[in-house]
Amino acid sequence: MALPQERSILHFRVWPTDLDTSLHMNNGRYLTVMDLGRLDLMVTGGLWRAVVRHRWTPIANAIKIRFRREMRLFQRFRLETRLVAWDRTTVVIEQTFVLVGGTRDGQIAAQALFKGGIYDRRKSRFVPIAELMRLIGVHADSPLPQPEVEAFLKADEELKLAAKRRQ
Image (cartoon, rainbow, N blue to C red; front, side):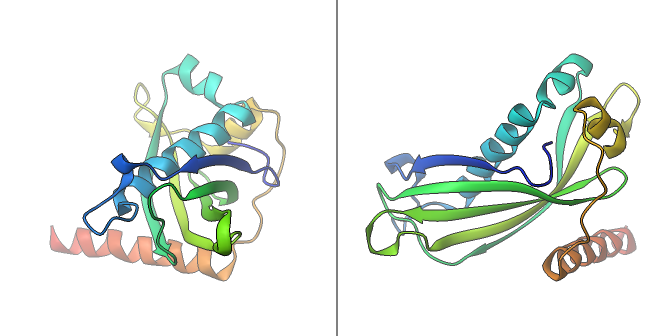
């Protein structure tokens, strides 16, 4: 968790172990790299100490990713991660993969929205975002969700309802 205007920026390179059979970065690897961006946001924002101290667990609820440009072997890129909205118990984080160097420098390779929260297993509940904000000294209201965030949240809710109907 970080201040809404803060952003984590991490730099990477595509290595042979990141490739799929099409010789570009495997789509599952994007999710792994995204975990690192969110962890960096929590550490630099001061939340990670509280997570460890209370034995809380970060939980992913939903992820939507759009691939725009492939990333091939040895391509340098950066991952930009920022908090874009929150409600009572969950946050929405935007994560953007940006190509670095060469003729495609600055182009977006992929963009993702992540929804998740911090779970307290001892109390069997998600920790309220207001409590998390208070722990790191932040007093802010969520920005109004952009249209793409609203659509993401609506799609997530529809999937949740569809699963309940099937049970």
